[in-house]
Image (cartoon, rainbow, N blue to C red; front, side):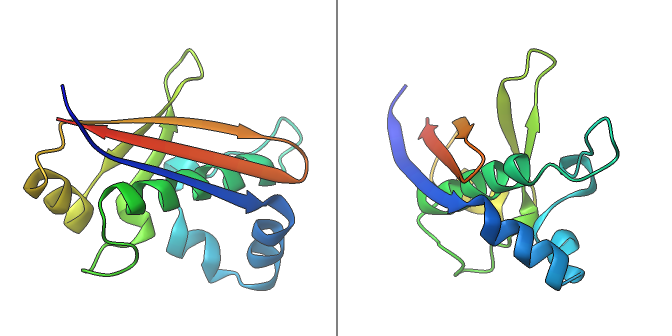
Length: 125
């Protein structure tokens, strides 16, 4: 197993909350339906969304594309195993780029406070 790339990103939770509340299309443009979860009270978990956003940015860095080469945010889906551990599913152009780079797995980690969320990705062959 060889490391192909490492990515890390830090996001202000308030920035994601503002984007969601000011632009209705933001959620659908950035997140897959499976990624958008509500709390027990039926409200969005902005810390969780910010963490997922940070992982998406980290994966773009691992793929060495940024927002270029046709890769979009919603092609990087950040979900959780039943244990709570996060993982990513790639689709579309993101998956094509990963395959071209020989990436077999992307390991991710997320952490957040009320104010900040961080995401990290490590791609391996």
